[in-house]
Length: 124
Image (cartoon, rainbow, N blue to C red; front, side, top):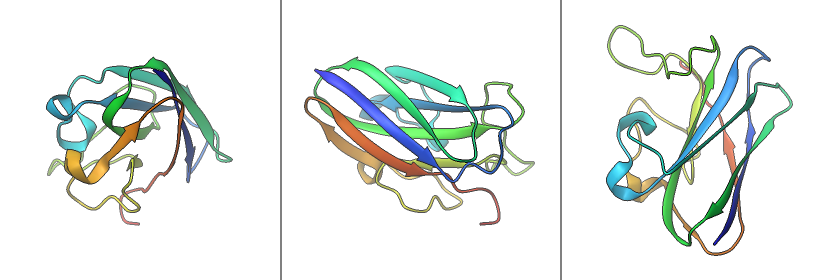
């Protein structure tokens, strides 16, 4: 058991929040939807933020993070269902039009874990 810390970079502006979740395989849904076992948020900052998930049991997880530019605490989608806000995932360098599978985004947590996630925005 330990902390999972995620350094989030690539944030376009200081508007809104950066929100992240840690998921087990059965809870990881399209674009990081579903119910995370832990959630964290921070005020957006172009120089980056750190999200901290404390006291997480050892195991396999996936992380999803997004820039909630308008502060509504939801990942906004465009008219065809593609995310309209910046997002990123553990172990995925560049999020495409589709969300990665749990297996693609999975990481092992044993003790304290440090992850780096760079957000990508639509059109990048």
